[in-house]
Length: 430
Image 1 (cartoon, rainbow, N blue to C red):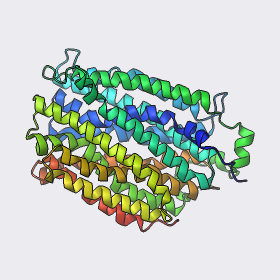
Image 2: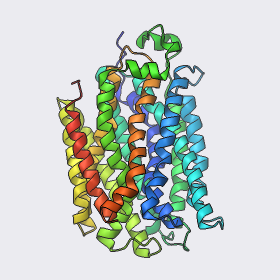
Image 3: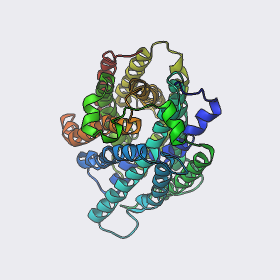
Image 4: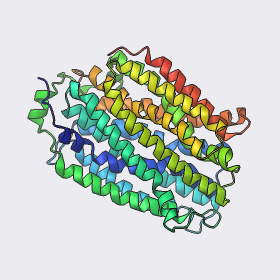
């Protein structure tokens, strides 16, 4: 039986908490390299600090997906995991930016930062995945593109807030510099405010969204009789070809994004501000400006997300978006004016919008009738996490190959997105 059509505001409420989760995620992605460079990490080992986030994602999300498939409570099946993950994220967000403030040695501070980063990403993954599952559970095929576009809009709106917070807090008087090895107060308080917004948004979702009871759920999501006994290996073996073909595209895309998150602060500092020394005021200013560029990327993504559903051919929209993003990455090392960097990041925003919406549209439509929606989406998260792990392991070696210029890593990201665009042509589906 086809799922009932949902009003715009019901689709909105399904994903609204994603706004707060994405603030936390954007604070992490835009400030992790800055934090660890400030703590004393070497650029050639910097990508290793980025192994933990995708590693925790690939471990946590399939577990959350599988367990929530079998969970029924008064709050629902997905929302309990969302609520617990958000509460855990709030606690860890208070600790991570203070890694250099407890009088520890450089090595100990880096280890403390790694542990808190692991916990933060575990909790963010636990809070993030249920939103995709809610759409898969309760939204009809013909509304999924719209639902995921709304999710993309809220994701990018949350990103804007998270990205600009250090810049805004600096402009109103918080210090953007600190003693060597200590994270500036502008970053610390950005994490505090992000944690507050996160828990408010998640509580809103808990009160506004009522998941279906088991009987209603089974009416609209008929599942095979063998669902309870299927292992992850069985699910992967029986997955539709679209699951794997989209996964190939995901590999190139998320490897490209990993290199952006890892090296773009130093790339902008090197290209625009002429320094990669984290102890200088110029470097911290470059880090703040990179946050603004991230926000511009997110705003461009918001606009592009409203255009994507207008394409009659989703594959064309997907491939074109990735090509635009690849061009944006390739431009970064050649633009030495701060304002000029806006253009590359707007183009990257086009790719980001497509990466958030298109893969899940293809995959959830292909999974209709397979059952185990939560488990499959948790496993599909591996196509996001594995590329980042591989890219993180190779990052130092590739950086050496490009003469240790972190700005050149942006060209590497551009090539990867172009390969992703080519791979879109192999996806079967409209």
